[in-house]
Image (tube, rainbow, N blue to C red; front, side):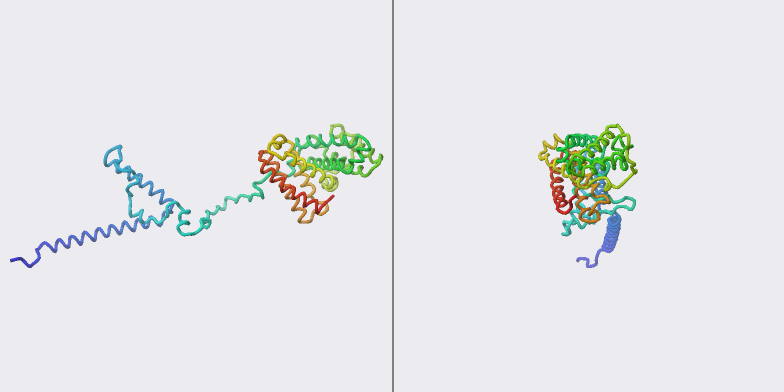
Length: 361
């Protein structure tokens, strides 16, 4: 007959099984809690790095515990901590992948803010980074080249009365205005010439040439030629016996004829346009740099206080644009970037047209 009562050992077996199950469940819960805590405290990027390091360490341990010097499996086959890896909610590939998965544009992910002790970078000007400019463009080389050109043209313009009659409204006023502007800059704003100590006299003698070249006939020719001879001698290191009583500093508008300055600006632009190929720009790089510098500087001069229209917003806007485009042409010529050079000249031409349409003289 079969024994209908359970064996005396069955209750003991069931109690032992329940105890073992409860202990395993507690250990699994504790491991899960620790993994979740680590996942919250560590940023996604650091978790990825930590996981990779754990994989390598675990792989090295596996190698050491089996066959020294030889791994039975690659390091990335087994996860060293599968529960922690499973709880890691950070997407693979970082923020870009997260944005793609959620349908949110990547641009919506904000970059880290700059710290208070680090200033924000200056915004680049239109057309690129900051460009060369200002009175510093009147270097010793620019002064030397320009004065030499002025002397050559003046010698031709004053060679006889007929030449003078044809040139006094153009080349003579233009060249004297350029010298007056350069002398003002050299005397008060930089050290671009060896005659800095006599710059105020160069400035006022240049203004005197402009004053005398006021009409036709021999009397105006003679007065202009005499005024030029005094100026030419001073530039050559031979001071005239009588020099004007000159103030240390005066506004450009008192000595520089705006019409004459603009004639020189037009001449510079026309010369820059001649370098219409990359090869031509390369062969004439020095001339391009010089003419662009003169154009930038004279633009700054005619935008200075004292001239008509100076308070108009459009006038200042045109002048600022022209000065910037001239600086961009200089940079392009220096770097032999013909595409950028052509672009600067194209925008320069538009500014010239706008200026000539609205402002003259």
